[in-house]
Image (cartoon, rainbow, N blue to C red; front, top):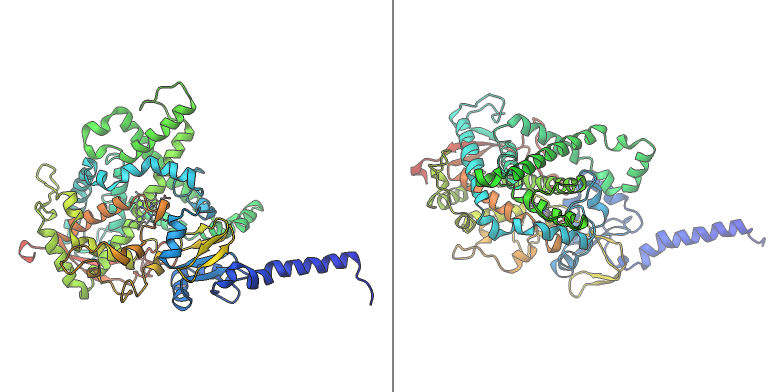
Length: 564
Ligand code: HEM
């Protein structure tokens, strides 16, 4: 037999090495080979999961795989989906696994990282410590700013607007009454406007934040811009190297059209203008003197923390409010503000829309009536709220927070319709162990992408019987009190968990509770058209919308005193 030449031998060796590295090892020898495959190609190629993801079908598809294979499923050569608490979310999220670059590719603003986009644990927790206090429950429930925001956004803006729609004054005016029917509103737009006004008012102060509720044209344009961009995050998040290559050869616009950059620029400019106004309000001191709601609570906290750092760097300068900001500090604040604004309005707007949908279905009319009774039993109550500041006494924030049925209705909506039902990817450290007790997989190497999703965790039938049904009473005990212990809370993951859990969860609960209390203390709602109410299947669960351009049309009827 002839001897092989050296180049041929090298080729054979290369072939064997590649065969081992990319086929034999991942299928038979990798520690991940002990995990059931999502698809026969999963150990050697990510194409299958990328295809599912591109088509926005990930949540339901991966959930069905967990039901079939158990808590660990291998999605790709180096990617695992995890659906359990012990050996799952406790290990990954409370254990502080790093985020990797999935977030940093799309969630940095102005080219500057913020809390959400920061990959590594240490810089992230330093940033989070700067802000946690301003979002703490005790601070929020006692906050004069939040009280003033409820008065302005709910009593002065929302209730008069809804009143006009119900009385028929706004019918056919092209604003809320898309259906041009008396008393009918587009719920998704109403709730997005309200949550944007709420969140930006807390961040920048009422006078400096948005007024979408009374400026619907701006609200629509903003929402369209914001939503349309989201379809293009797939490329930089899931295929960063390919996206970078396409950009480097001038073909980036084939993946992400130019208008997406322009829309991002508009949104960044808008946020920067609110930062400028908040800065001016702080400098003129008008913020805290005029009106509690005008104080830019989050902006001021962020500014003070970053100025402290800036001052340390410019050693010798006295730290004070008047310290002028460097451009770097300005952009750092703006990046953080824009991230929180986006995270805060959209998630809460989505939650409120699904809540309105469930509550307004004919089969849930009894729950709606009981909720109205609970809300109207408050003294003072939103049923007596008036747009006149002097004439209104609002219910106490702590009392609203403790209403059991209101809490249960929101928890159940967050469970079944989590606004972020999709994957929250993290990266394994070396030699990780995952899987429930007794079925652990040991020796998982460093750098494997692992992820859990609220969609699947919230559909565990052993913890949430009949998981596809919206049943708020599952959150109450036999005495009608909130049942906040046990397995349900361990599996409840609407706000994530661990060090990277939602920093705004208390603000989310406070604004959602107050919006629900103000609306349903005064009105009864019924579904008119819900063709648009299907979940998007990826990271966010915003409703897809119908071909006619609506999401959820609800009929509102004024609740008379005798109805309660
Ligand atoms: C119903 C409303 C909300 C839901 C369901 C929600 C859900 C979540 C979830 C699941 C995460 C973790 C995401 C991940 O790691 O991929 C998160 C993080 C975050 N949320 Fe929320 N959120 C809500 C409201 C808010 C509000 C009102 C704000 C602020 C104004 C906010 C600001 C943030 C920020 C800054 C993070 C990143 C935290 C970190 O990286 O440490 N969220 N949220």
